Length: 319
Image (tube, rainbow, N blue to C red; front, side, top):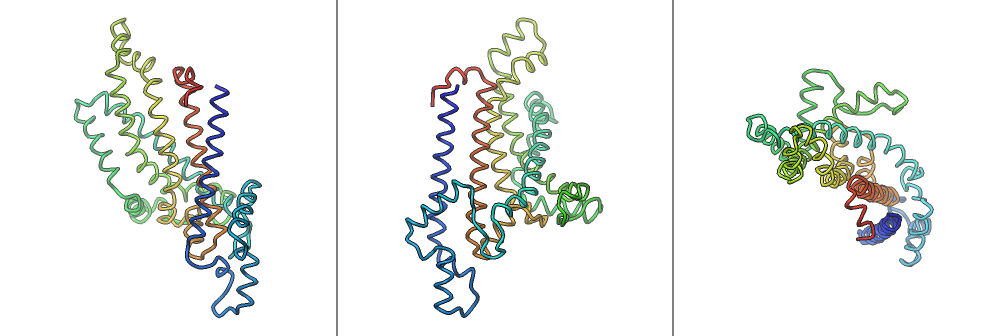
């Protein structure tokens, strides 16, 4: 298991290096010079040259790349061209919105999807089992921004139970206002993810119900519920955990849409603003941190699978 863990860590670091290389190349392929973000209209040649020296765009690409990788290794994401603030500090402030939005929405999605997915599989021959499956399919087809607008219309405009958007200026220092501000965004994220996750739970449960070990347990005298809980849940959880990792990463990356609908100052909003302002350090920082978090989510999901399934632990040396 230790060998496997070291191998996975090596793959994680290699994936992060490849992502950093791709990020560096793509940003340098964009038209224009990063120094333009520091200058106004009508800048002189001397000002342009000074700005290029300041941002390092006058250096050879290889020198820029070595400096870029070195800074990433020290977790130095640079300084914003526009606000002059530390990119890492700004990302930390934005993550205080994006991470709770993602985690709370994801946990609520699990609470919704797990029981409903099991019911949809166990009671597939009943009308409500079929209805759950149909509703989940409709949920997948609904765009997240349309669902967000619909939720705002119902709960904020018509019922006036929650604010339609925004976030307290003091952030989580005012916990009550912050929690209320995230209520509708979290619900939006949860419904979208639950609709997708429910299908996988239903499919995994159906596979478990048709397995030999469930039939054997029933033949030995175990009741249906006992056989499902004792023998089915653990086996059915293995493929679902893999999907959970993918869905969590998708939720994190897709938070930009929800943040835009609800005017939340999260990581996605920071990325959109940085692209509009051609603030290259902010763009690089957000994309790098996002990639790192997605890779860590996949790493954690893989380890959790092996912790739950002894068969995978027995193949720890396998790729």
